[in-house]
Amino acid sequence: MHELTQSFIFEAAHTLNRAYLADPAAVLGSKRIHGHSYRALVTVRGIADPTTGMLLDLHTFRQQLHTVQSQLDHHLLDEVADLGPATLENLTQYIWRQLQPTLASLYRVTVERVLTGDSCSYYGT
Ligand SMILES: Nc1nc2c(c(=O)[nH]1)N=C([C@H](O)[C@H](O)COP(=O)(O)OP(=O)(O)OP(=O)(O)O)CN2
Ligand SMILES: [Zn+2]
Image (cartoon, rainbow, N blue to C red; front, side, top):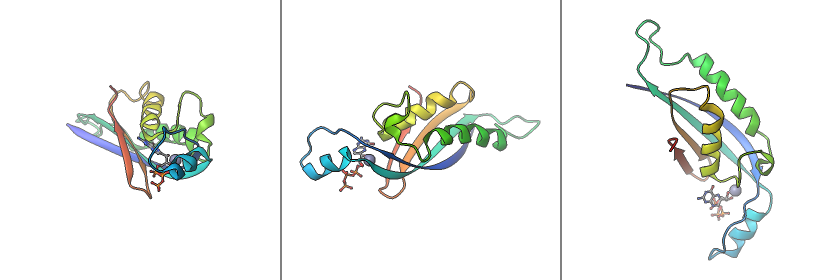
Protein backbone atom coordinates (compact mmCIF):
# COMPACT_ATOMS: atom_id res chain seq x y z
CA MET A 1 0.00 0.00 0.00
CA HIS A 2 1.38 3.43 -0.98
CA GLU A 3 0.50 6.90 0.25
CA LEU A 4 1.22 9.73 -2.18
CA THR A 5 1.06 13.30 -0.86
CA GLN A 6 1.16 16.68 -2.50
CA SER A 7 0.88 20.02 -0.78
CA PHE A 8 0.04 23.57 -1.67
CA ILE A 9 0.27 26.92 0.09
CA PHE A 10 -2.53 29.45 0.32
CA GLU A 11 -2.66 32.83 2.00
CA ALA A 12 -6.10 33.89 3.10
CA ALA A 13 -8.05 36.09 5.50
CA HIS A 14 -11.04 35.38 7.68
CA THR A 15 -12.99 36.39 10.76
CA LEU A 16 -14.08 33.97 13.45
CA ASN A 17 -16.72 34.29 16.14
CA ARG A 18 -15.40 32.43 19.15
CA ALA A 19 -17.13 31.50 22.34
CA TYR A 20 -15.98 33.59 25.25
CA LEU A 21 -12.44 32.65 26.20
CA ALA A 22 -10.37 33.49 29.22
CA ASP A 23 -8.58 36.00 27.00
CA PRO A 24 -11.00 38.63 25.65
CA ALA A 25 -8.21 39.94 23.38
CA ALA A 26 -8.13 36.60 21.56
CA VAL A 27 -11.90 36.74 21.06
CA LEU A 28 -11.72 40.30 19.73
CA GLY A 29 -8.69 39.53 17.59
CA SER A 30 -10.41 36.69 15.83
CA LYS A 31 -13.54 38.75 15.15
CA ARG A 32 -11.46 41.28 13.19
CA ILE A 33 -10.42 40.39 9.63
CA HIS A 34 -7.00 38.79 9.88
CA GLY A 35 -4.84 36.53 7.75
CA HIS A 36 -2.98 33.28 7.94
CA SER A 37 -0.50 31.39 5.81
CA TYR A 38 -1.80 27.86 5.28
CA ARG A 39 -0.35 24.70 3.88
CA ALA A 40 -2.68 21.93 2.71
CA LEU A 41 -1.38 18.39 2.35
CA VAL A 42 -3.50 15.95 0.37
CA THR A 43 -2.80 12.22 0.53
CA VAL A 44 -4.09 9.47 -1.75
CA ARG A 45 -3.64 5.85 -0.75
CA GLY A 46 -3.63 2.65 -2.81
CA ILE A 47 -1.51 0.18 -4.73
CA ALA A 48 0.69 1.53 -7.51
CA ASP A 49 -0.15 0.29 -11.00
CA PRO A 50 2.51 -2.35 -11.82
CA THR A 51 2.71 -1.14 -15.40
CA THR A 52 3.15 2.58 -14.78
CA GLY A 53 4.62 2.25 -11.31
CA MET A 54 2.26 5.07 -10.29
CA LEU A 55 -0.60 5.37 -7.86
CA LEU A 56 -1.59 8.61 -9.62
CA ASP A 57 0.38 10.73 -12.06
CA LEU A 58 1.77 13.67 -10.09
CA HIS A 59 0.91 16.08 -12.91
CA THR A 60 -2.76 15.08 -12.75
CA PHE A 61 -2.66 15.27 -8.96
CA ARG A 62 -1.17 18.77 -9.05
CA GLN A 63 -3.73 19.99 -11.60
CA GLN A 64 -6.58 18.96 -9.30
CA LEU A 65 -4.96 20.63 -6.28
CA HIS A 66 -4.43 23.82 -8.26
CA THR A 67 -8.18 24.09 -8.80
CA VAL A 68 -8.87 23.97 -5.05
CA GLN A 69 -5.93 26.27 -4.30
CA SER A 70 -7.38 28.93 -6.62
CA GLN A 71 -10.66 28.82 -4.67
CA LEU A 72 -8.85 29.67 -1.41
CA ASP A 73 -5.60 31.57 -2.12
CA HIS A 74 -5.89 35.32 -1.55
CA HIS A 75 -9.57 34.98 -0.70
CA LEU A 76 -11.60 36.26 2.21
CA LEU A 77 -12.63 32.81 3.45
CA ASP A 78 -15.86 34.20 4.95
CA GLU A 79 -17.02 34.59 1.33
CA VAL A 80 -16.19 31.04 0.18
CA ALA A 81 -19.45 29.19 -0.46
CA ASP A 82 -19.98 25.89 1.34
CA LEU A 83 -17.10 26.46 3.78
CA GLY A 84 -18.75 27.74 6.96
CA PRO A 85 -16.63 29.27 9.70
CA ALA A 86 -13.05 29.18 8.36
CA THR A 87 -11.59 26.89 11.00
CA LEU A 88 -8.89 24.36 10.21
CA GLU A 89 -11.50 21.66 10.66
CA ASN A 90 -13.85 23.16 8.09
CA LEU A 91 -11.01 23.85 5.65
CA THR A 92 -9.98 20.18 5.66
CA GLN A 93 -13.57 19.08 4.98
CA TYR A 94 -14.03 21.73 2.27
CA ILE A 95 -10.91 20.57 0.42
CA TRP A 96 -12.04 16.94 0.82
CA ARG A 97 -15.46 17.75 -0.72
CA GLN A 98 -13.84 19.53 -3.67
CA LEU A 99 -11.45 16.65 -4.43
CA GLN A 100 -13.35 13.50 -3.49
CA PRO A 101 -15.50 13.28 -6.67
CA THR A 102 -12.41 13.04 -8.91
CA LEU A 103 -9.81 11.54 -6.54
CA ALA A 104 -11.11 8.04 -5.86
CA SER A 105 -8.14 7.11 -3.66
CA LEU A 106 -8.34 10.24 -1.44
CA TYR A 107 -7.23 9.25 2.05
CA ARG A 108 -6.33 12.30 4.16
CA VAL A 109 -6.46 16.11 3.99
CA THR A 110 -4.32 18.07 6.43
CA VAL A 111 -4.34 21.84 6.78
CA GLU A 112 -1.59 23.59 8.73
CA ARG A 113 -1.15 27.17 9.85
CA VAL A 114 2.50 27.38 8.99
CA LEU A 115 3.65 29.99 11.50
CA THR A 116 1.59 29.01 14.54
CA GLY A 117 2.17 25.27 14.22
CA ASP A 118 -1.52 24.42 14.27
CA SER A 119 -2.62 21.47 12.15
CA CYS A 120 -5.80 19.49 11.53
CA SER A 121 -6.34 16.29 9.52
CA TYR A 122 -9.55 14.86 8.03
CA TYR A 123 -10.08 11.27 6.82
CA GLY A 124 -13.47 11.52 5.18
CA THR A 125 -15.72 10.27 7.93
N1 LIG B 1 -10.25 24.34 16.83
C1 LIG B 1 -9.90 25.54 16.32
N2 LIG B 1 -9.75 26.63 17.11
C2 LIG B 1 -9.41 27.84 16.58
C3 LIG B 1 -9.19 27.97 15.20
C4 LIG B 1 -9.36 26.80 14.36
O1 LIG B 1 -9.18 26.85 13.14
N3 LIG B 1 -9.70 25.62 14.96
N4 LIG B 1 -8.85 29.17 14.65
C5 LIG B 1 -8.72 30.27 15.42
C6 LIG B 1 -8.43 31.59 14.77
O2 LIG B 1 -8.27 31.42 13.38
C7 LIG B 1 -7.18 32.34 15.30
O3 LIG B 1 -6.89 33.40 14.44
C8 LIG B 1 -6.01 31.44 15.42
O4 LIG B 1 -5.96 31.07 16.78
P1 LIG B 1 -4.66 31.37 17.62
O5 LIG B 1 -3.43 31.01 16.85
O6 LIG B 1 -4.87 30.72 18.92
O7 LIG B 1 -4.62 32.92 17.78
P2 LIG B 1 -5.35 33.73 18.91
O8 LIG B 1 -6.24 34.68 18.23
O9 LIG B 1 -6.01 32.80 19.89
O10 LIG B 1 -4.18 34.54 19.65
P3 LIG B 1 -2.80 33.91 20.06
O11 LIG B 1 -2.24 34.88 21.09
O12 LIG B 1 -1.96 33.89 18.80
O13 LIG B 1 -3.05 32.55 20.61
C9 LIG B 1 -8.89 30.22 16.87
N5 LIG B 1 -9.26 28.93 17.38
ZN1 LIG C 1 -7.64 33.12 12.37
